[in-house]
Image (cartoon, rainbow, N blue to C red):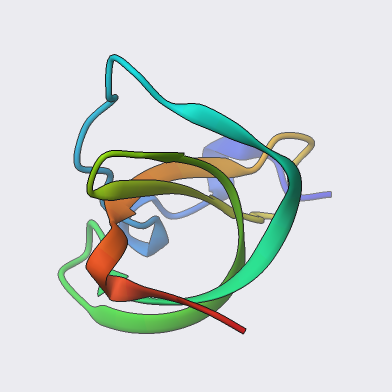
Length: 81
């Protein structure tokens, strides 16, 4: 397991906020996300979607740690696999 302090913040997906109203999915679903990282790179990743809200979805980015990085990203940039 990688220690959290060693995980580069630049590789994490940028989150666009924390919506006031959202719904958790009964089961996470696989999605393809094209979005940017805090390091400024545009990436395409296959991740799990955990929740949805108006115009954004929450995806889990596994970082090799006990807890994944959860990021709210624009729904228009997410497609089911």
